[in-house]
Image (cartoon, rainbow over all chains, first blue to last red; front, side, top):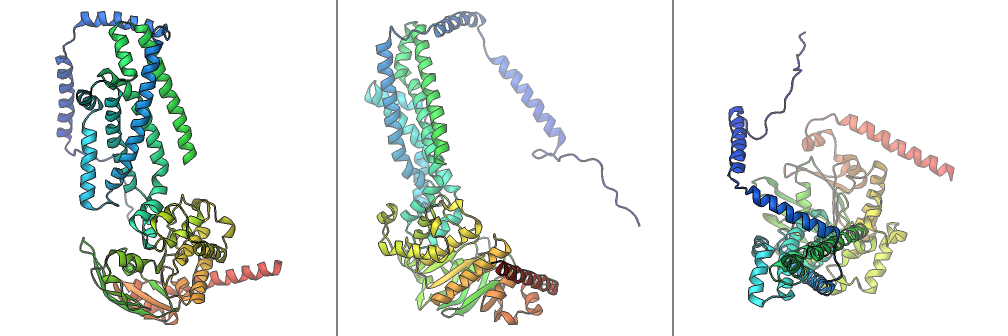
Amino acid sequence: MSETVYHRHWRRPPTMIRDRRVRYALYLGIVLYLVLAIGSVDVNWVRVWEGFDRGWRFVLGFLQPDFTSRWRDISQGLVESLTMTMTATVAGVIISVPIGIGAARNLAPRPVYYACRAIIALSRSLQEIIIAILLVAMFGFGPFAGFLTLSFATIGFLSKLLAEDIEDIDEAQAEAIRSTGASWFQLVNYAVQPQVMPRLIGLVLYRFDINFRESAVIGIVGAGGIGATLNTAIDRYEYDSAGAILLIIIGIVMVAEYSSSHIRKWVQ
Amino acid sequence: MLTVDALTKTYKTGDKALKAVAFTVPKGQVVGLIGPSGAGKSTLIRCINRLVEPTSGRVLLNDLDITALPGSGLRRARRRIGMIFQEYALVERLTVMENVLSGRLGYVGFWSSFLRRFPAEDIESAFRLLDRVGLMEHADKRADALSGGQRQRVGIARALAQDPELLLIDEPTASLDPKTSRQIMRLIVEICDERGLPAIINIHDVLLAQQFTQRIIGLRAGEVVFDGPPAALDEDVLTRIYGEEDWTAMRRSAEEDVAAERDAAERMAGMV
């Protein structure tokens, strides 16, 4: 009786590119490209050196933040930013929930699905700053343009993630509710909502702090809020005030972060 | 009474799940639907309430042609067909009571269901059903806080809340231990008996099917290959349904199971 001889060597078969020569050629190509690409970046080392100097002044301003001398501007900018964030998040959620439901393949009929996906794609393809520039040109400087920008960006973000969540629900629960003779709205309310609600709340809180951070960025292009204040401070070389503003932004984002993780735990 | 006539389902992939299946279930009869995995058992019961759209053939519930109904009529028909699922299919984050009341969704309007304001008689009957399945004190717990057997009882109460004329039951015991399985099967059969409800139970445990149902339909590759009383289910028939296997061994171990259970029950009774 002969015994089967088993191999004592095993290697994982290559998953993507089977041919060894093609694989090494590809690695070589990537390395070559990287070297050439880095070589093509034109660095002005004198300017970098000067930049260090400015950066150092910025760091010094950061270490001695000046909250007081521009406090009026800062507080006004902050209130504007927070208002913008709050209203834009609420408006964005109200609009994005129906769009998110419409963009879920397992709930919406085909034409609605494609329409909602198109809205999402449009909202996601335009970056906040570009929308802000456009809207500032349309509605003038100030927080209204900022509010519209953030609402628009919120729709793309929330609708997409909500739609994906809805597509991932446990279909058995939906099937059970459907089998009771429930209408479409009842199906959404009884089978879908309980399953996606905790994550939706988490996403809304997450979007809230993204919106706050974005409000600082879009302020720079004229959409009001703390970003406008920050921009003015930097333009005036008042790095101590700028440092104070950045510290406040970091503080608020941190508070939002901690409170949202608490709320998320609580809704689970 | 349920009549299934030449029911055929061909999936888009070309798989013929059902081939001209036909049978009639009179009032009060509990039918066990057995067959190997992939025989079309799930498809068959889902075609009856059109969770899966049949390709051709008819399903008649008391002379109402379900297969011909448009959207709203289908919803009205579905509410008279209770369904019980494998893995329970409760909405996990809703309370037990909400799950039971969801059996009334076909009868109430959107706003009263949204605000959870169900008619008093619906609430009363929901409590009565919870009491019947022995879960009165769990009404306000979340469904995911219950054990498997308890969840399946909620599933039964939900189906009964629909005030059904027919029960479709898909593998009710697949995720339960043998003892709980027997309890659940007994409960289902008792309830069907109390209400004169016909039921189709999709089940892969042949012995449970034989023990609790009045009639067995055997499905193989989408065709009915056996239709008769449980007693007629001998080795030949099992081989026709499932293919070659040593059936006597299965029976012997099952008899031991039943004997052990009886023994345990006697001992429990002796202790009281």
